[in-house]
Image (tube, rainbow, N blue to C red; front, side, top):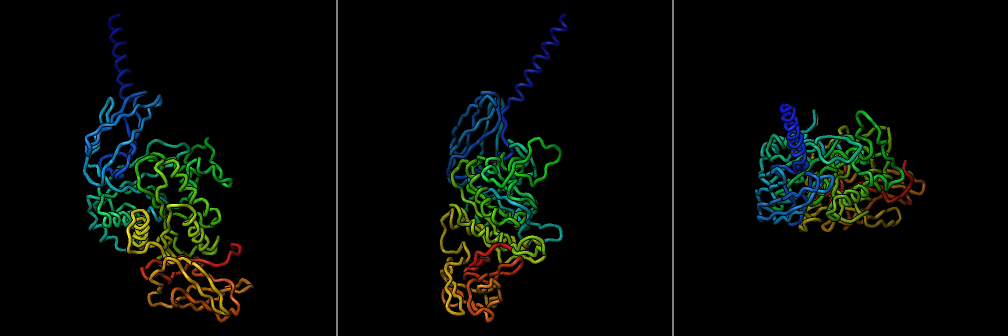
Length: 472
């Protein structure tokens, strides 16, 4: 009998210790040593603890403690005040256990997402290089830049955690990190002289719909949610599954904004993409709860997609239209960087830099340089001549000594012919000997073409058309 009592007592304490262990405070992987917290705001800390437990978060920069009470589901969240950029600091989170995060910096935090052109690492893909990568990697050690790569995951339900951790910026880490994101962050770090944290969550070949939440998908009557009873390996193309697995676990983490490089996989549906891109932005903003944070994206580059599907100029047009569709959004144009037979342009630094120009000018208020390329302002027809003027060309236009070769003109028959074009004053004059009475102009409106029109600051003009004739 005594032996039975002792056995029951041991079992009781074993169960009690197991319950206590399971009730320990835990945070998602986005909180780790080496993390960067957004400066001069109230950043959220959140996670799981025991039912109705009180969680304390203590910060070394102001010697303050903040408390939050977990709900009946164990979830808790608390806002913590951050100072101007600096560090390193420590953050301690405690309940029945204690977690200490070390080497924490305060600075600027950006989420970086999309498909393969965002995923492409600084070292490049197999047989597909990134220009200047070896030097960039060799000199990359930088204590003020931190990198987080989210491990690929799909899920039909929103997840509370994913795999990954904040890494120091040093050659081996940089080599495998998103090139576009890295060059973007590096310019911010140099221009602002503050720590920068970059969170890369991307998956090659994916459409935009998987990156939206269920609430975001429901805003579009032409989209359908996947069956929640699906089993087995989930396709990363299913709506919501990448948001659930690779974005939701960090929703609410303090950020300044997001950058995006995607669109190739949606290229045959430009009329939908022009709605989906701002839809994704508004979806993320509503869930993050930190206001209308800035969102900048790369317009897909020209590429030879072959004879299948639409001319990719239409998806570029959709992306250009999206750049003015909602507030606090902007596009980086890379019309000059496309490669005919490689969908991953090698000059990732130029793309990352142009995203940084967007952020520096529009988010951080820096002046004295250009962020946007020339955008058509007005078309005037004078006989056989078509005269075009442009916004974002205060100091004029240039082709850097090359002949302008990307313009076409059409008459009422809607047949486009090659045109001569030359820079004159504040614009471009276009004429074709094959069209006596022009009605429409197109610039670089082809699958693959190398753009040749820039402002004098070196930012290229997007492909564009003055007509609205049906897509074909």
